[in-house]
Image 1 (cartoon, rainbow, N blue to C red):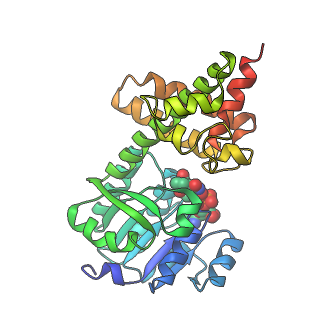
Image 2: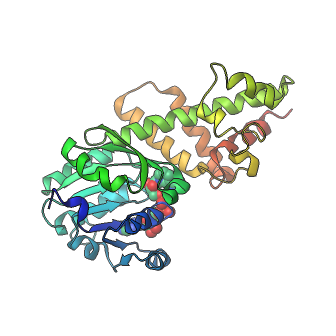
Image 3: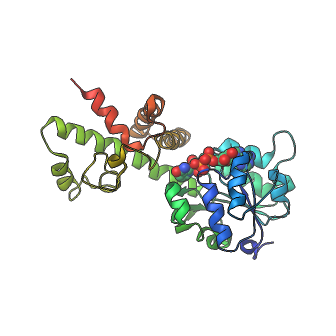
Length: 306
Ligand code: NAD
């Protein structure tokens, strides 16, 4: 392969909420995509968009120059690479295939995936995304990329077909590191903003007054000014549509568990990250899994009722 990896066949594994529309954008741009997902309905939907599908991941990978995975977890990625009941994708892929994982997984798992890919004679890139299903459909995702410089140059034109911002964060695992750090800020800040609004309510402040002050003062942050957890001040925020996601509570809980794993493996004293993870695990378990993560404010308000 490899200087022309970006123009060869892309094996696309994982046609879920994110992977489905991402694969469509690659095909729209003229790429040859061969896709696989164990869910028949996902394959059917892909075919309706002109994507070639096959009956196994092995078949998809056999003639590919890039293997793009968009899977639920690091275990799915490592199992696929290594194989569970038979040879894994690393053993089947042509030499020097570029393995491009866009799933959100543990930093340590991403580094492990890169190590075994390199050991098997391949190339490896981690490129988790932010922007959600809307960004996947509109090709406006942000990609956070961990890669060797030459591999970054290879994947950049592919990622540009699915995203708007492509950031090279460093070597293998750096994309996942950036994602986990960013989402830890987001989880913690959404809880802080929500607590402040509930406190404001108790103190007799209107939502608009608190918003007008904090959004122009040192409390300013994305959780307040874009995804404001109360209806009114930011008409496009999920709070205005009864907390339909948006970014679902289950995904925030997942990303904070990844943050906690990273805090523990590095020994960082991340008390807020740990606490946010516990709070979002409870939120997801108690009905918030499918609601926008800003719905945490309703939990805080309920628990503050006297
Ligand atoms: P999803 O569960 O909708 O899709 C995952 C797909 O992978 C499923 O269709 C599943 O059948 C398929 N799959 C599982 N094992 C497979 C295998 N061995 N080979 C091929 N396909 C396989 O998940 P999603 O929402 O699309 O998210 C995918 C990844 O992106 C996750 O890691 C998630 O954390 C991350 N992410 C999601 C969002 C979001 O808003 N949904 C945003 C950012 C990042």
